[in-house]
Length: 81
Image 1 (cartoon, rainbow, N blue to C red):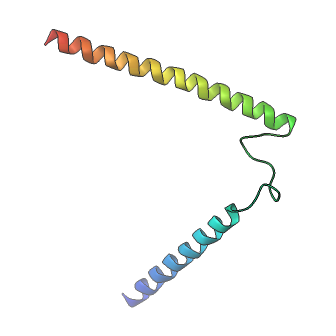
Image 2 (cartoon, rainbow, N blue to C red):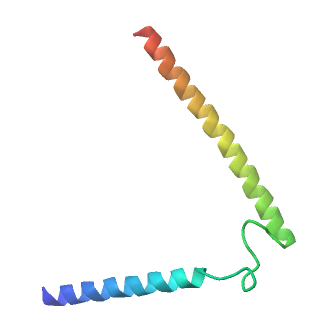
Image 3 (cartoon, rainbow, N blue to C red):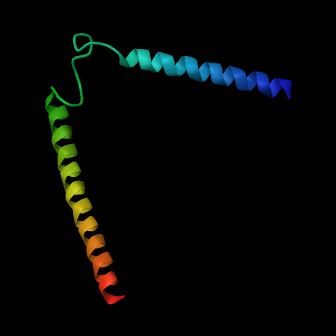
């Protein structure tokens, strides 16, 4: 039991260390890492960005249509009862 507690403490400590390291790696200015997903620079990155935006907009429209259909079904069900 003491061995599993020790390994659990090691795993927890390692998880915290890795989390802090990942958080610190993500911090930095635009001078060190100018490429972002919000402003693609390369030609292929722009193609991927335009495709991702198209998918996002289509998914948004589908979401709104499904929500509208759900509201209509709820309203029509209440009228029948």
